[in-house]
Amino acid sequence: MKNAVRISLALVLLALFTFAQQPAKPLYVLEDSYLRWRLLPAEQSYDAIDDKHLKQYVEDLTAISRRYRDHGHPQWWGRISGTEADAENAQWLADQFRKIGLTDIRQQSLDLPPQWMPVSWSVTASAGEKTLALDTAQPTSTSPGTPPEGLDLEAVDVALGAEGDLAGRDLRGKAVFFYSAELASRHAPISDGAIKRIGARGAAAIFVIVAIPGNVRTQFYPVGSTVPTFSLGLQDGLAIRDLIGKARGGPAPRVKIRFDVKTVPKLKTATVWGSLPGATDETVFVVAHRDGWFEGAVDNASGVATMLGIAEYFARIPQQQRRRTIYFLGTSGHHDNAAMSGHWLAEHKELFAKTALLINCEHTSAEQLVIARGGGIRRSNTTVPLRWYVGGNPRLEQIVVKAYDSFGVATDAQPDSEPGGEMRPYFNLAPSLQLIEGNLHWHSDQEGAGDVPPTGLAATARAYSKIIADVNQLNLADVARPGSEARR
Ligand SMILES: [Zn+2]
Image (cartoon, rainbow, N blue to C red; front, side):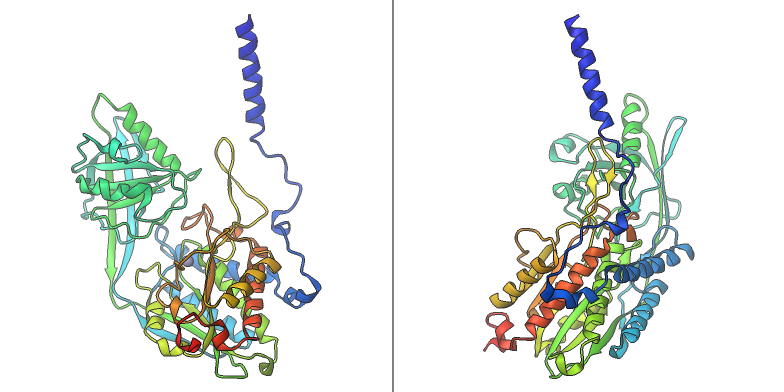
């Protein structure tokens, strides 16, 4: 009897707990209800940077990606370097620069090295009567393709792909699946180097099941694998694991992979330039990369929108009150493994001889997505804290910290020691800074405009604008990196 009471109590608690997972009906419209920072009287001029207006830029850029997808590129799409989506967004950005009133607007054409361009692919698994289409399979960047007739391989599941999971396993010539709970990685070292470990044991194809709730397609950077390598959504991943597990003791399931990929030479991309002349020949550079996979809303429509917000703010100020010329650059980006704009800038050090500040606008606003108890993703009314980098004089560091505080830019507690991302090849040629972070949808087919809180766009554009204004009160030597020429 006592046990029965205990069991029913446990069931009631379980029911209560389960019930608690279900959200109630919304009490506000999310798009209007992201947390807003109230500006102090001294900062009212930055109210001109309007969050909803900046959000429209994100909508425009994500539409360019969808247009490319809907014009015959259903699997491999985005604002991809060298494609018509690249040309369209370069033209779009030049048009925005013109509308804002920038001068010397031009597209600097850059030759791309031969580009890895997937044409189409399919992955299916079968055991006995049962066939699974693994639709969320997404080739990792620069992955080799298959022969035209495809591959037909035995499927094996190696759990987490750790040393212990692989011990004693024969993976030669097989399609190997492993599961990764590293939700933020789209990189080669995922799961402590599992892809490399599995490849070294002779796998003929590798699949990383990314445990983001749902069934998300994620695009990885190159993983250094010499065999066809894909990421896989969680539902598809669990389904193939079940298929493999249930077949144990009988014939192993087979996986059929067909992946057609081309290397396309002679493509072009561009850096889009615009400027706002100032009262001196000293300069400030503001850059944002134009490319992105899928809709690329956070990465990097958000950064482009932030850059445009800064341009609009300073375009309203008379030239004589703008101490320095501000250059705005829409760069080609780095998802193409070429980073042409970045390398060109790195080779033109002379451009930065009189540069007081270089700001990279990259992933400047991303909604905090929450993994709900019991699975699934819940949305929220706030942005993720951003990783940040600032390199220059301690006076610059103080200006930056104060600006983030003034405009409600949430950051990690400590800055990064070096910037990753677009600015990496040339960040040390001038005092420089960036804010950067994505959310769970980063590099996935779920990363839409809804992932970009307009408030985050305004906060970063306002903070960056205030930083430029404050730095313009100082001489080059006051903000320069210790040991740099301007310092001496
Ligand atoms: Zn980016």
